[in-house]
Image (cartoon, rainbow, N blue to C red; front, top):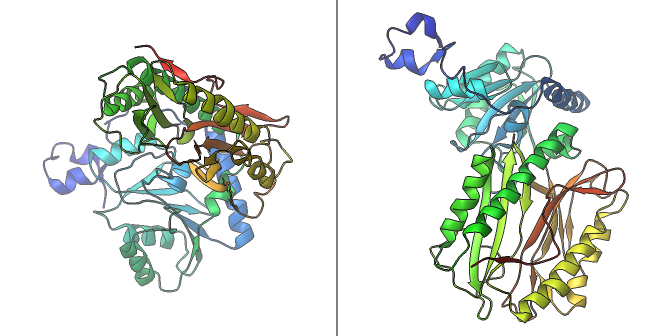
Length: 425
């Protein structure tokens, strides 16, 4: 049940009235960065071609907040970016309007209606997602249809809440539900120009975040304060923070090879090195940067390791990110670290859907889907290397984000690679 605000506006202290409002003036003056209608139509056409090929009457799009995504296919189809829920849901029919089933009522759902780029936004009716999805599928005449369900978290993978699935089976006993763990990958493997420019904007925000971190990196400053500075720069630039992983340790007595996922209250000291992995997204599209920062001049050992091992290995991988090359060409380039007498955290390069995705190129293996083996224009990748000394006691993290072009690649992070950054203390 929904209530036109014009009819209940004088009785908003009634719980039912307020929780189910629509057509209010609330947030109509809010402004959100959105993709164009043409971009959404391109996406929808792509999805419907796949649905026609695979005999699917509708998709249940899902997505939830986790390390590899924010709302995945729901964001892709609607523009919703909201981490406040275990899982978000949308119905995408082969014919007809897409529908977002939004978890929160009242003012929240009215704000969501302004953010997204679709017209049909429905309440979950207090978390009764299965019921609301079933109603929409019945409206579409798909009670006995074949329905695809996208993954919400590629760890597992996981697809949706168990109660939602049980309710769907109960309410639509003749429908056929099929889990589609790789559909979003097929939809996003080749980026559009609008998506690439959104990633470039995210890349610019990553640079601002790194520069903000560097500007405050002085003895006595705590890791969480570095994270706060970087986060402010991204939010202040109109983006969103996905990862702000920052750790510090002594260059002379290191206790870390990789940025800390949980920036601590450790205070910086002269002679420290700061490792960071910063991920920003803009309109749901992401970019990543990582660059070592020293507090005061680097030790000779650290400077040499960066120049001869870290930078050399990075350039070897970067040189293989060319259209027509294979993922195996990239993986083989990673032998550089062992050739220089060092080792490496296994992951070196990964693909990007909206956030981190297949293919994953490790030192010792490749995880990819059919069709990923050859690098193509429009593919996007992050190089993220963590070379480690032979004893396993010291390492550095270096990362950038790329889109493959017809001629080679475009680095979406405009920040110099050739030198360690030395914070001014």
